[in-house]
Image (cartoon, rainbow, N blue to C red):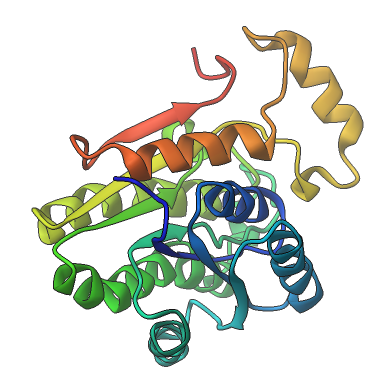
Length: 246
């Protein structure tokens, strides 16, 4: 699919991988709706970066864990930009809890992470699907995590929520075919603000990776765009982690 003149929604588009995806899509000629929940300043800065280069973008607030807000967001985007052709389901949250501290994985933590990382991705896909079907084409990328493959990560509920997001990819690919393709990009360690306060840990990890480098948000964004463009692929879980999981 040629991304030029398409309309893309990127959830959590103000920072990190989300921002990089917004900028990469804009570089390819797409109009971009930059979703945020709390990071309004970051989202508006992303929009300004796109507009400074002659692109078209809007910032739009919605908590993806709330279906009503998601549907309202999608309606607003369609009103302002005409349709939605592309969805990057990027918004995710975590809690840093030692894996073996089962008592700390409370009901509140499970609900919070699942509401955003799994249900939120479903709500967004469901809301955009009618417009993609109307256009007889559409593409969705879910941003997963190697935590969902290895069982390791910032917390046990986070790892399980990402495994669920990988499963959601396959189920949505079946449910939305043939008009809409759904794939999952699975980053390993990425140099984003998730490492704030743990920069030394990140530096120690890099030499142990096969490629001896931590992925950048731009690395992940490039693969997101490639997955959106590839018309012969759906339901795939694609890992980009500098060899971390080998």
